[in-house]
Image (cartoon, rainbow, N blue to C red; front, side, top):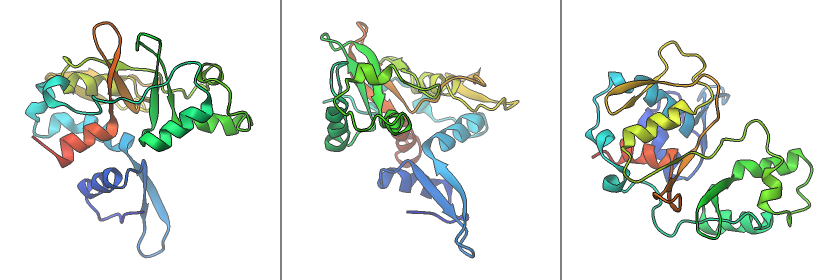
Length: 224
C-alpha cells in the first residue's frame, strides 16, 4: 500500500485508517523511489501545529463522554504476570496495538504495545516468550512511549493538547502549539512519543482507549 505525492492529506488519512496501517509510503510515480513516509503521528503533529489557522471544530470543546471516541467497551487488557506469548495472541485476536496492564481491581498500572515487541529482537530474547509482561517492561529502552491517561469528562481539545505536549519531536519548532479549549499550549521539545491515551474513571480503573487513529478518523473522516 502506497500513495503518490499529489494525493491529498485526506486520502492519506483515509488509507491509513481503512487499511489499519501505521505507515504509508509516498512513492515518486516516475522513479518508484520512496520520497517519505506518512504516519498517524506526523499528521497529528501537523494538525496540532496549524490548528489555530484552520476553522475550529466545535467538537474540540466537547467531552469524550459526549463524542464517544475510541474503544469504550470490551477493552482488551493484560496483567503483569501475563506471558508475552499470550499478549501477542491478544494483539492478533483483538486487532489492537497496545494492551493496558491492570491490577486485580482493573486499575491502570502500565501498558504493553506492539512496539515493545521489537525490543525482544533487539535484546535477542524473542525465544523466551513465557517471560511475564512485568519482566519484559523492566528492559524498556529510552523510546518507551509512556502511559498517558485521560477521563471521559475531559474535552477532545484537552486530550489532543496532552498528547502534543508529551510528543518527542516538537523539534523545538518556534511555533509548536496545540489548541486546548481555545488556548495555545506549547509542546515539549523532548519527552515521550505517545500513540494513545488510556481512559480511566475517577478510581483509576481502565474504561477505554483512545488512539491517534481514533482522533484522526473522528476529526477528518467523520467530522461533526
